[in-house]
Amino acid sequence: MRRNQTEDARAKARGNAFGGKSVARRSFLALGGAAALGLIACRIGVVNANAETIPTEYYPLGEWADLTGCFFNELSGEDMAGYALRIVSAEAMNASEYLARYSADPEVPENVEVKNTSIGPDADVVVLEYEVRNDSNENGGIALYNQRLIPARKNVAYSYDEQLWLSTEPQLKSGFSGGFGLVKGTSFVTHIPFCYVSNPGYLEKYDRQLRMPVGADRDFELILCNAPTRKIVRVSL
Picture 1: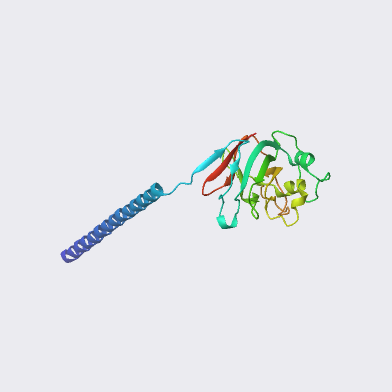
Picture 2: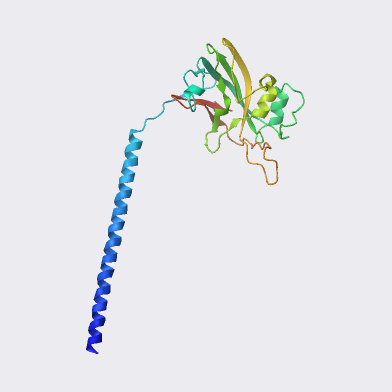
C-alpha cells in the first residue's frame, strides 16, 4: 500500500513539473508575440512618418487648372500637356431633363435608361459645365474615365455618364474611348453628367443603367488628376 502511495506522489510531482513547463512556454510565446507586434507597429509608424505626401491643389468654380504634367496612373500614357480645364457651373437634375436640355437628338436613344422624376430630391445626375482649352498639344487629350466626383460624405464615387453625355456630343461617338482631344489652339464647352450607378436587380439585364438619386448631397470634389500634384475642384450645387 505504501509503495502505491509513493508511486502516486511521484506521478503527481511529474505532472506538476510538466504543467509548469507548459505554463512557462505559453507565457514565453505570449511575450514573444507581443514583442513582435510591437516591432511591426513601430515599423509601420516609422514608414508612415517618412512617407512622401502628394501635394494637393484646390480650385473653386470658374478657376482654370493647368493639367500639364498631370496624370492618374502613368504619365507616358496620359498626355495632358498644354491642356487647361475649369468647371464653370454645377447643377443636379434627372436624366430626362438632361436629355431634354442638352441632347442633340430630340428622341431619347433606345439604350439610355431614364427616370421620370422631378428636379430636387429625385435628381440622379450632377451636371458639370466643362470649359477645356488646348494651348499647345498635338496628340494628347482629357481622359474622362479617370475623373471622379466625390460627395462631401465620401461614401460613393460618381463617374461620368457616357450614355447621356454622348447623346449631347454625337461627333464623339465614332471611336470614343473615354476621353477627348482638341485641335491645338482651340477650346471646347460641354455639359458632362456624373452619376452613381448601382448593380442591376435580380434577373435584370447586367448592362441596365440604374442611376441612384443624388439626394441631399450639395458639396462635391472633382478629382482632375492624382500626381505629381493632386488637383481637385470644389463643387457646390
